[in-house]
Length: 398
Image (cartoon, rainbow, N blue to C red; front, side, top):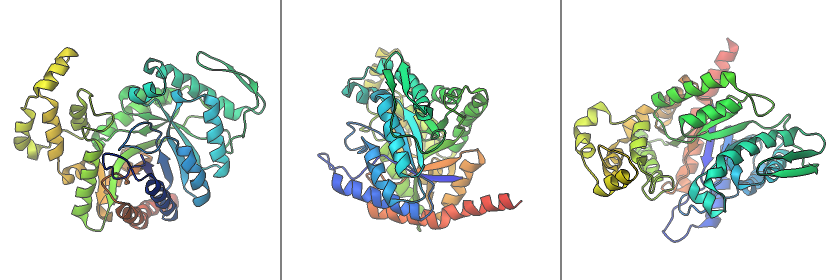
Protein backbone atom coordinates (compact mmCIF):
# COMPACT_ATOMS: atom_id res chain seq x y z
CA UNK A 1 0.00 0.00 0.00
CA UNK A 2 1.19 3.50 -0.88
CA UNK A 3 0.18 6.67 0.95
CA UNK A 4 -0.50 10.10 -0.49
CA UNK A 5 -1.87 13.45 0.61
CA UNK A 6 -4.43 15.18 -1.60
CA UNK A 7 -4.70 18.98 -1.46
CA UNK A 8 -7.57 21.21 -2.51
CA UNK A 9 -5.64 23.94 -0.64
CA UNK A 10 -8.30 24.85 1.89
CA UNK A 11 -8.25 27.15 4.88
CA UNK A 12 -10.97 28.60 7.13
CA UNK A 13 -13.16 30.90 5.05
CA UNK A 14 -14.80 33.87 6.73
CA UNK A 15 -17.29 34.51 3.92
CA UNK A 16 -15.20 37.30 2.43
CA UNK A 17 -11.67 36.08 1.76
CA UNK A 18 -8.97 33.59 2.69
CA UNK A 19 -5.61 34.21 4.31
CA UNK A 20 -3.77 33.17 1.14
CA UNK A 21 -0.30 33.88 2.50
CA UNK A 22 -0.75 31.55 5.46
CA UNK A 23 -2.50 28.94 3.32
CA UNK A 24 0.44 28.43 0.99
CA UNK A 25 3.09 28.60 3.69
CA UNK A 26 1.22 26.08 5.82
CA UNK A 27 0.67 23.81 2.82
CA UNK A 28 4.38 23.75 2.00
CA UNK A 29 5.20 23.02 5.64
CA UNK A 30 2.77 20.10 5.69
CA UNK A 31 4.23 18.70 2.48
CA UNK A 32 7.78 18.91 3.82
CA UNK A 33 6.72 16.97 6.90
CA UNK A 34 4.98 14.33 4.77
CA UNK A 35 8.22 13.83 2.86
CA UNK A 36 10.18 13.45 6.09
CA UNK A 37 7.84 10.87 7.69
CA UNK A 38 7.53 8.56 4.69
CA UNK A 39 4.49 9.49 2.59
CA UNK A 40 4.79 8.40 -1.04
CA UNK A 41 2.88 11.09 -2.92
CA UNK A 42 1.56 14.62 -2.86
CA UNK A 43 -1.40 15.38 -5.12
CA UNK A 44 -2.73 18.86 -5.92
CA UNK A 45 -5.96 19.71 -7.71
CA UNK A 46 -6.48 22.38 -10.34
CA UNK A 47 -9.60 24.41 -9.61
CA UNK A 48 -10.73 27.91 -10.55
CA UNK A 49 -13.20 30.39 -9.01
CA UNK A 50 -14.14 28.12 -6.09
CA UNK A 51 -13.87 30.57 -3.22
CA UNK A 52 -14.01 28.85 0.13
CA UNK A 53 -13.31 25.45 -1.42
CA UNK A 54 -10.03 25.39 -3.33
CA UNK A 55 -7.05 27.73 -3.59
CA UNK A 56 -5.10 25.67 -6.12
CA UNK A 57 -5.52 27.20 -9.60
CA UNK A 58 -1.91 26.64 -10.72
CA UNK A 59 -0.34 23.83 -8.66
CA UNK A 60 2.81 23.76 -10.78
CA UNK A 61 3.89 26.96 -9.01
CA UNK A 62 3.75 25.16 -5.67
CA UNK A 63 5.51 22.22 -7.31
CA UNK A 64 8.46 24.45 -8.13
CA UNK A 65 8.87 25.19 -4.44
CA UNK A 66 8.27 21.58 -3.43
CA UNK A 67 10.85 20.33 -5.91
CA UNK A 68 13.49 22.06 -3.80
CA UNK A 69 11.96 21.50 -0.36
CA UNK A 70 11.33 17.75 -0.64
CA UNK A 71 13.68 14.90 -1.47
CA UNK A 72 11.81 11.62 -1.95
CA UNK A 73 8.06 12.15 -2.14
CA UNK A 74 6.46 12.00 -5.60
CA UNK A 75 4.58 15.08 -6.79
CA UNK A 76 1.30 14.62 -8.63
CA UNK A 77 -0.87 16.77 -10.85
CA UNK A 78 -4.11 15.61 -9.32
CA UNK A 79 -5.35 16.68 -11.78
CA UNK A 80 -4.45 18.92 -14.73
CA UNK A 81 -7.61 20.08 -16.49
CA UNK A 82 -6.73 19.26 -20.09
CA UNK A 83 -9.53 21.15 -21.91
CA UNK A 84 -8.38 24.42 -20.30
CA UNK A 85 -4.88 24.47 -21.77
CA UNK A 86 -2.90 24.01 -24.94
CA UNK A 87 -1.30 20.55 -24.72
CA UNK A 88 2.12 22.00 -25.54
CA UNK A 89 1.92 24.22 -22.45
CA UNK A 90 0.94 21.26 -20.29
CA UNK A 91 3.77 19.15 -21.71
CA UNK A 92 6.27 21.92 -20.95
CA UNK A 93 5.08 22.45 -17.37
CA UNK A 94 5.08 18.76 -16.52
CA UNK A 95 8.51 18.25 -18.06
CA UNK A 96 10.00 21.19 -16.16
CA UNK A 97 8.70 19.91 -12.81
CA UNK A 98 9.92 16.44 -13.75
CA UNK A 99 13.40 17.80 -14.37
CA UNK A 100 13.44 19.80 -11.12
CA UNK A 101 12.38 16.72 -9.12
CA UNK A 102 14.68 14.23 -10.88
CA UNK A 103 11.69 12.31 -12.18
CA UNK A 104 9.24 12.42 -9.28
CA UNK A 105 6.20 13.60 -11.27
CA UNK A 106 2.84 11.81 -11.60
CA UNK A 107 0.38 13.17 -14.15
CA UNK A 108 -3.35 13.05 -13.49
CA UNK A 109 -5.90 14.49 -15.90
CA UNK A 110 -9.54 15.56 -15.84
CA UNK A 111 -12.23 17.76 -17.39
CA UNK A 112 -13.55 19.76 -14.40
CA UNK A 113 -17.12 21.14 -14.42
CA UNK A 114 -19.28 23.54 -16.38
CA UNK A 115 -18.97 26.39 -13.85
CA UNK A 116 -15.19 26.49 -14.20
CA UNK A 117 -15.20 25.74 -17.94
CA UNK A 118 -17.60 28.54 -18.86
CA UNK A 119 -15.63 30.97 -16.72
CA UNK A 120 -12.64 30.38 -18.97
CA UNK A 121 -14.49 30.45 -22.27
CA UNK A 122 -14.56 26.67 -22.70
CA UNK A 123 -17.70 25.07 -24.12
CA UNK A 124 -18.61 22.21 -21.74
CA UNK A 125 -19.94 20.22 -24.68
CA UNK A 126 -16.43 20.09 -26.16
CA UNK A 127 -14.51 18.99 -23.09
CA UNK A 128 -14.66 15.23 -23.67
CA UNK A 129 -13.22 15.61 -27.18
CA UNK A 130 -10.65 18.17 -26.01
CA UNK A 131 -9.51 15.82 -23.26
CA UNK A 132 -9.27 12.93 -25.71
CA UNK A 133 -7.13 14.89 -28.18
CA UNK A 134 -4.85 16.25 -25.46
CA UNK A 135 -4.30 12.87 -23.74
CA UNK A 136 -3.30 11.45 -27.13
CA UNK A 137 -0.87 14.29 -27.88
CA UNK A 138 0.97 14.47 -24.56
CA UNK A 139 2.80 11.12 -24.49
CA UNK A 140 3.77 11.65 -28.11
CA UNK A 141 5.27 15.05 -27.26
CA UNK A 142 7.26 13.58 -24.37
CA UNK A 143 8.59 10.68 -26.45
CA UNK A 144 9.49 12.74 -29.51
CA UNK A 145 13.27 13.06 -29.81
CA UNK A 146 13.13 15.62 -32.60
CA UNK A 147 10.44 17.99 -33.76
CA UNK A 148 6.80 17.37 -32.88
CA UNK A 149 3.92 18.29 -35.19
CA UNK A 150 0.16 17.81 -34.96
CA UNK A 151 -3.00 18.48 -36.93
CA UNK A 152 -6.17 17.93 -34.94
CA UNK A 153 -9.68 19.15 -34.30
CA UNK A 154 -8.75 21.67 -31.60
CA UNK A 155 -5.00 22.15 -31.91
CA UNK A 156 -2.50 22.43 -34.75
CA UNK A 157 1.23 22.44 -34.06
CA UNK A 158 3.72 23.01 -36.89
CA UNK A 159 7.03 21.18 -36.55
CA UNK A 160 8.62 22.40 -33.33
CA UNK A 161 11.14 21.09 -30.81
CA UNK A 162 9.25 21.21 -27.50
CA UNK A 163 11.40 21.95 -24.47
CA UNK A 164 12.47 20.84 -21.95
CA UNK A 165 12.71 17.10 -22.43
CA UNK A 166 10.92 14.89 -19.92
CA UNK A 167 13.19 13.36 -17.24
CA UNK A 168 11.29 10.05 -16.80
CA UNK A 169 11.54 7.69 -19.75
CA UNK A 170 9.44 7.11 -21.71
CA UNK A 171 7.09 9.48 -19.80
CA UNK A 172 5.39 9.90 -16.39
CA UNK A 173 2.49 7.66 -15.40
CA UNK A 174 -0.85 9.09 -16.50
CA UNK A 175 -4.22 8.97 -14.75
CA UNK A 176 -7.84 10.05 -15.09
CA UNK A 177 -9.92 11.51 -12.26
CA UNK A 178 -12.97 9.25 -12.06
CA UNK A 179 -16.29 9.48 -10.25
CA UNK A 180 -18.60 7.26 -12.32
CA UNK A 181 -18.59 3.88 -14.04
CA UNK A 182 -18.25 5.54 -17.44
CA UNK A 183 -15.01 7.27 -16.46
CA UNK A 184 -13.58 4.07 -14.91
CA UNK A 185 -14.18 2.33 -18.23
CA UNK A 186 -12.64 5.21 -20.18
CA UNK A 187 -9.46 5.12 -18.07
CA UNK A 188 -9.22 1.37 -18.64
CA UNK A 189 -9.74 1.76 -22.38
CA UNK A 190 -6.91 4.30 -22.58
CA UNK A 191 -4.61 2.20 -20.40
CA UNK A 192 -4.20 4.90 -17.77
CA UNK A 193 -4.56 4.76 -14.00
CA UNK A 194 -7.47 5.87 -11.85
CA UNK A 195 -7.59 8.70 -9.34
CA UNK A 196 -10.98 7.93 -7.82
CA UNK A 197 -12.26 11.31 -6.71
CA UNK A 198 -15.47 10.31 -4.95
CA UNK A 199 -16.05 9.05 -1.41
CA UNK A 200 -17.18 5.43 -1.19
CA UNK A 201 -17.80 2.74 1.35
CA UNK A 202 -15.15 0.10 0.67
CA UNK A 203 -17.59 -2.63 -0.39
CA UNK A 204 -19.14 -0.30 -2.98
CA UNK A 205 -15.73 0.86 -4.17
CA UNK A 206 -14.77 -2.77 -4.72
CA UNK A 207 -17.49 -3.10 -7.39
CA UNK A 208 -16.13 -0.09 -9.31
CA UNK A 209 -12.64 -1.56 -9.12
CA UNK A 210 -13.87 -4.81 -10.65
CA UNK A 211 -15.23 -2.88 -13.64
CA UNK A 212 -11.87 -1.18 -14.17
CA UNK A 213 -9.65 -4.23 -13.57
CA UNK A 214 -11.65 -6.30 -16.03
CA UNK A 215 -11.76 -3.61 -18.71
CA UNK A 216 -8.07 -2.67 -18.48
CA UNK A 217 -7.11 -6.16 -19.64
CA UNK A 218 -8.20 -5.07 -23.12
CA UNK A 219 -6.62 -1.62 -22.99
CA UNK A 220 -5.39 0.17 -26.07
CA UNK A 221 -2.82 2.32 -24.25
CA UNK A 222 -2.64 5.94 -25.29
CA UNK A 223 0.91 6.12 -23.95
CA UNK A 224 3.95 3.87 -24.11
CA UNK A 225 2.65 1.47 -21.46
CA UNK A 226 -0.44 0.47 -19.49
CA UNK A 227 -0.70 2.05 -16.03
CA UNK A 228 -3.13 0.10 -13.81
CA UNK A 229 -2.46 2.09 -10.62
CA UNK A 230 -5.56 2.96 -8.59
CA UNK A 231 -5.39 5.86 -6.15
CA UNK A 232 -8.43 6.60 -4.00
CA UNK A 233 -9.48 9.84 -2.30
CA UNK A 234 -10.51 9.47 1.31
CA UNK A 235 -10.89 11.95 4.14
CA UNK A 236 -8.57 11.15 7.00
CA UNK A 237 -7.40 12.26 10.42
CA UNK A 238 -5.13 10.35 12.77
CA UNK A 239 -5.06 11.36 16.43
CA UNK A 240 -4.25 9.86 19.80
CA UNK A 241 -7.87 10.11 20.99
CA UNK A 242 -9.66 7.56 18.80
CA UNK A 243 -13.22 8.86 19.07
CA UNK A 244 -12.29 12.53 18.89
CA UNK A 245 -10.24 11.91 15.72
CA UNK A 246 -13.12 10.04 14.06
CA UNK A 247 -15.63 12.76 14.89
CA UNK A 248 -13.30 15.52 13.69
CA UNK A 249 -12.77 13.72 10.38
CA UNK A 250 -16.46 12.92 9.88
CA UNK A 251 -17.44 16.53 10.45
CA UNK A 252 -14.69 17.70 8.12
CA UNK A 253 -15.95 15.45 5.32
CA UNK A 254 -19.58 16.44 5.80
CA UNK A 255 -18.59 20.11 5.63
CA UNK A 256 -16.57 19.34 2.48
CA UNK A 257 -19.81 18.12 0.87
CA UNK A 258 -21.97 20.87 2.33
CA UNK A 259 -24.88 22.34 0.31
CA UNK A 260 -22.88 25.49 -0.50
CA UNK A 261 -19.96 23.56 -1.97
CA UNK A 262 -19.16 23.05 -5.67
CA UNK A 263 -20.53 19.92 -7.32
CA UNK A 264 -23.31 19.85 -4.72
CA UNK A 265 -25.11 23.19 -4.97
CA UNK A 266 -27.93 22.99 -7.51
CA UNK A 267 -27.22 19.37 -8.44
CA UNK A 268 -30.35 17.23 -8.37
CA UNK A 269 -29.89 13.97 -6.51
CA UNK A 270 -26.45 14.85 -5.11
CA UNK A 271 -27.21 13.79 -1.55
CA UNK A 272 -29.10 10.70 -2.62
CA UNK A 273 -25.99 9.68 -4.57
CA UNK A 274 -23.71 10.40 -1.62
CA UNK A 275 -25.88 8.43 0.76
CA UNK A 276 -25.80 5.45 -1.59
CA UNK A 277 -22.03 5.73 -2.13
CA UNK A 278 -21.46 5.83 1.63
CA UNK A 279 -23.38 2.58 2.05
CA UNK A 280 -26.92 3.81 2.67
CA UNK A 281 -28.73 3.81 6.00
CA UNK A 282 -27.23 1.24 8.41
CA UNK A 283 -29.59 -1.39 9.81
CA UNK A 284 -29.21 -0.26 13.39
CA UNK A 285 -30.30 3.28 12.46
CA UNK A 286 -33.12 2.56 10.02
CA UNK A 287 -35.86 3.15 12.57
CA UNK A 288 -34.50 6.61 13.32
CA UNK A 289 -33.68 7.38 9.68
CA UNK A 290 -37.11 6.41 8.46
CA UNK A 291 -38.57 9.74 9.50
CA UNK A 292 -35.92 11.57 7.46
CA UNK A 293 -36.37 9.40 4.39
CA UNK A 294 -40.15 9.90 4.42
CA UNK A 295 -39.80 13.66 4.31
CA UNK A 296 -40.69 15.57 1.18
CA UNK A 297 -39.18 18.81 -0.07
CA UNK A 298 -41.64 20.68 -2.30
CA UNK A 299 -39.03 22.87 -3.96
CA UNK A 300 -36.85 19.89 -4.81
CA UNK A 301 -39.82 17.84 -6.01
CA UNK A 302 -40.81 20.67 -8.32
CA UNK A 303 -37.28 21.03 -9.64
CA UNK A 304 -37.06 17.29 -10.24
CA UNK A 305 -40.45 17.20 -11.94
CA UNK A 306 -39.36 19.94 -14.33
CA UNK A 307 -36.37 17.77 -15.21
CA UNK A 308 -38.56 14.69 -15.70
CA UNK A 309 -37.28 12.94 -12.58
CA UNK A 310 -39.49 11.17 -10.06
CA UNK A 311 -38.35 11.13 -6.44
CA UNK A 312 -39.63 9.28 -3.39
CA UNK A 313 -38.06 11.80 -1.03
CA UNK A 314 -36.54 15.26 -1.26
CA UNK A 315 -32.91 16.30 -0.79
CA UNK A 316 -33.68 17.36 2.76
CA UNK A 317 -34.30 13.69 3.55
CA UNK A 318 -30.99 12.41 2.17
CA UNK A 319 -29.09 15.41 3.51
CA UNK A 320 -30.54 14.91 6.96
CA UNK A 321 -29.73 11.22 6.79
CA UNK A 322 -26.10 11.99 5.92
CA UNK A 323 -25.91 14.49 8.78
CA UNK A 324 -27.01 11.74 11.15
CA UNK A 325 -24.50 9.15 9.93
CA UNK A 326 -22.20 8.73 12.91
CA UNK A 327 -18.42 8.74 12.69
CA UNK A 328 -18.09 5.11 13.80
CA UNK A 329 -20.36 3.91 11.01
CA UNK A 330 -18.39 5.95 8.46
CA UNK A 331 -15.14 4.55 9.81
CA UNK A 332 -16.39 0.95 9.90
CA UNK A 333 -17.43 1.25 6.25
CA UNK A 334 -14.12 2.81 5.23
CA UNK A 335 -15.74 6.05 4.07
CA UNK A 336 -13.17 7.79 6.27
CA UNK A 337 -9.76 6.66 7.54
CA UNK A 338 -9.76 8.09 11.01
CA UNK A 339 -9.12 7.48 14.67
CA UNK A 340 -6.02 6.45 16.53
CA UNK A 341 -3.22 4.65 14.64
CA UNK A 342 -4.75 1.23 15.30
CA UNK A 343 -8.10 2.29 13.81
CA UNK A 344 -6.39 3.87 10.79
CA UNK A 345 -4.35 0.71 10.18
CA UNK A 346 -7.51 -1.38 10.30
CA UNK A 347 -9.29 0.79 7.73
CA UNK A 348 -6.29 1.09 5.40
CA UNK A 349 -6.15 -2.71 5.43
CA UNK A 350 -9.71 -2.75 4.08
CA UNK A 351 -8.55 -0.70 1.10
CA UNK A 352 -5.52 -2.90 0.54
CA UNK A 353 -7.67 -6.03 0.67
CA UNK A 354 -9.78 -4.90 -2.32
CA UNK A 355 -6.72 -3.94 -4.38
CA UNK A 356 -6.38 -0.16 -3.95
CA UNK A 357 -2.77 0.82 -4.68
CA UNK A 358 -2.74 4.12 -2.81
CA UNK A 359 -4.98 5.94 -0.35
CA UNK A 360 -4.91 9.67 -1.14
CA UNK A 361 -5.68 11.25 2.21
CA UNK A 362 -7.53 14.56 2.49
CA UNK A 363 -6.36 15.97 5.82
CA UNK A 364 -6.17 19.71 5.18
CA UNK A 365 -9.68 21.17 5.11
CA UNK A 366 -11.28 24.40 6.24
CA UNK A 367 -12.46 22.82 9.50
CA UNK A 368 -9.12 21.35 10.62
CA UNK A 369 -6.38 23.70 11.78
CA UNK A 370 -2.82 23.59 10.45
CA UNK A 371 -1.54 22.42 13.81
CA UNK A 372 -3.94 19.45 13.87
CA UNK A 373 -3.05 18.55 10.28
CA UNK A 374 0.65 18.51 11.21
CA UNK A 375 -0.17 16.29 14.19
CA UNK A 376 -2.10 13.89 11.98
CA UNK A 377 0.60 13.70 9.29
CA UNK A 378 3.31 13.01 11.85
CA UNK A 379 1.35 10.33 13.71
CA UNK A 380 0.30 8.67 10.46
CA UNK A 381 3.91 8.62 9.28
CA UNK A 382 5.31 7.28 12.53
CA UNK A 383 2.74 4.59 13.32
CA UNK A 384 0.47 3.79 10.34
CA UNK A 385 2.78 3.76 7.31
CA UNK A 386 5.43 1.54 9.00
CA UNK A 387 2.78 -1.13 9.65
CA UNK A 388 2.40 -1.59 5.90
CA UNK A 389 6.11 -1.31 5.21
CA UNK A 390 6.57 -4.29 7.53
CA UNK A 391 3.90 -6.23 5.68
CA UNK A 392 5.56 -5.57 2.33
CA UNK A 393 8.95 -6.58 3.74
CA UNK A 394 7.48 -9.84 5.08
CA UNK A 395 5.94 -10.66 1.68
CA UNK A 396 9.28 -9.95 -0.02
CA UNK A 397 11.11 -12.24 2.41
CA UNK A 398 8.74 -15.08 1.62
